[in-house]
Image (cartoon, rainbow, N blue to C red; front, side, top):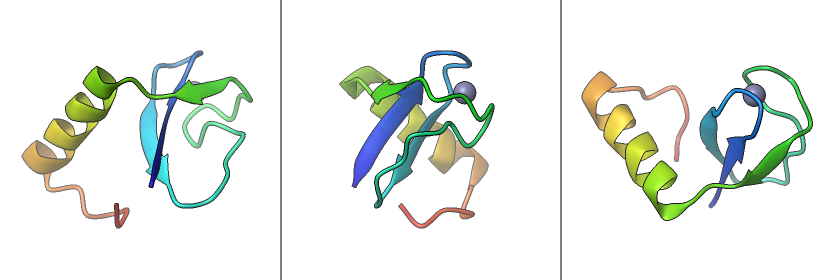
Length: 55
Ligand SMILES: [Zn+2]
């Protein structure tokens, strides 16, 4: 599983496939997410019971 963060809108997401566009704003300015950003992402997922993605 790969975690990415968008440099434009700070959206963090995970994907199993290569991804070059931010799914939120559509810009091609992604970088690997830091451990802190991944932790925040997972906390957010838990709090909001977001089951839309499977990772
Ligand atoms: Zn974005």
